[in-house]
Image 1 (cartoon, helix red, strand yellow):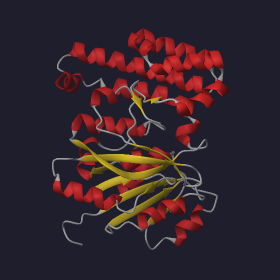
Image 2 (image 1 turned 180 degrees about the vertical axis):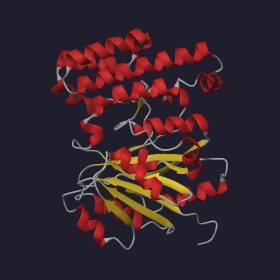
Image 3 (image 1 turned 90 degrees about the vertical axis):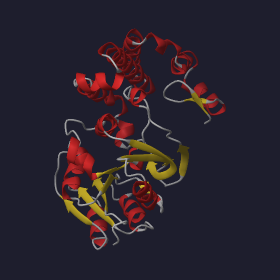
Length: 324
């Protein structure tokens, strides 16, 4: 390969995703850009996953053994990798055919950029498109609230990031990407590519859906860790006073939207407790369209909300509006 065609390492953590993983593998194998190292770290699957991995052994490397979960698997894969550019793609998500070429071309022109991310399409279990999400440029101050959506399957970064800030935090099982991207934003230059780079499968059994309310504790842990480096935070936000205000606002958002997750699961005592705490920490949460929608559901019920929801414009996670 030419020097202008750097090796790209894609890590796929996997466990009992035999119904989806072949489609994930093919989305990497069929890329128009060919200098790719695909590493699958399987946690000891007992379904058809191993048979599928054996079938594609010529185009990827893999290991199947018990591990300590997804974060452990991602770090194992990165440690085995050799690429100048790194990403991880879960075993139920997909790349578009030109994704890696698009990323490599961008990095080759913009040597000052260390991490990129783009737009994403959500798909269902049958791989049918549900919706397309335009990510937009991520601002650090807003990202610290834990409410901005940075679609993990669209993220690619240079190896120098690993060399400086290390690996994913294995204390985290759900929000390890939120933590890692935060650390990258604090230390490196990033860029948004207004291009659809991946498809993410959204379904009830998915870990991010089934455990959504459990993100709260991990988000608070990430926030405490981020603000523990006072010198770095002051250099970013100008003063410790402003940094503390941003942290309080971020905590308010995390509790408020954590409460909304409990509400979505009909756990109303927990929802009320967390929403109230979020409002105490950041009173402007009282103006959130989500709070109005929350009370609408309580008063009129979810059945009516489901009927009128598709006819409304949906607030994004920061309280502004986007078309459904």
